Image (cartoon, rainbow, N blue to C red; front, side, top):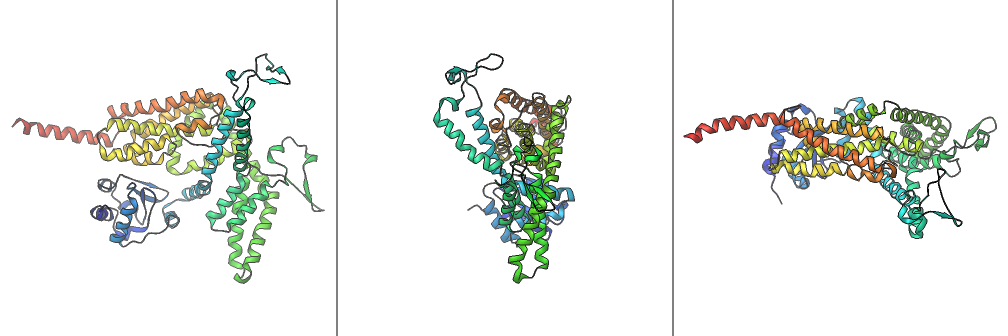
Length: 511
């Protein structure tokens, strides 16, 4: 087992001592601190510690990158500092003291969507694969024949077979995969209401039941509302008033509003209902009113607001200045990640999918991932031979290309500034091209290079061009910015110091 005793002592000193630590924990690769006074942490000295591979601050937490041996480092830190670790949830709770109201709101939003994102990614991959099987016509498979007649389009062009038309096996696979896809997207409100209950510390099964009441088969499916006459919509008849029996499949805002109402009702009831009878009355008087209010007030309101948001975004993306919208979104997405505001795009993406059958935002997010990775790739090239930095930069670049940008941004790009700006510019250009050609994803999926799998088939070619832009432009700009000291502070200082050392050394060599 490695001995990090000296490194631990240095970290404890440079972070402001034990008295400056409110809470400490660790994840897979990082030490996570909540500091009473973050200004006391000396970033430069901490990053010079041999075991430390970088630092960054996010969501009120001061995070020190250690690597895969973080558990060993953490144990020695706890022993020397006398600070007992707490759970990551407790660290998150403590870190809120360092957040402003907007950051707290975004943190809540992130904690709601984070647990369900793996399922949404799986769903996006499934939709992409089903499109390959059931949507792409392939001339090599021959012309489609129905009842002995060859099929043509209205323009007279031949209609070719898809994979599902010529293979019973793949037709069965395509049908089977929709079982999973439907569970993920149509029943998304169940995941949202469960996640809210989990985050708020309330009864999770009640959150699940609430979600089911929003998508129950008894209700008119949300996708069928637009095509159903008002007189044909089923309703509950209470004599003196009626409630439409409309489902909220794939709807985000109705589920969020209902989930928070249930959580706050339960928390409020716990304070006033005696413990002896709380098991009976708290769930009943929390769930039943919530379901009623969800179907009469919150659901319709959430549906309207969600429709406004998605229509506004969709209109912007389809307007005559959509290129500007795409350029700005692509350029600003990485700064949104820093603030945590990027989590709001998950809700918008899902609302766009529900309302329009696809999202134009997700392709730009995937391109932003690639752009940040390409900027890091340029730093690897420029700083080749720096073994310590490569322990951060190489895994960070790979992570970006697979859709996770935080290690690259906080560990490398923001540290030097100019690669971060180069990535923003490359992402903006790629986003502009993507929007001009209306590149659309089936849903949220894997980011980075695998993001291609989420893109609707007809947009693959142009998206590949956008990926090439997101790779080449940031790489080239990063090299140019460093060469001409544009947005360059850290590297410029290092170059100056190296030049001064060379000038001083030359007379000595002459002697």
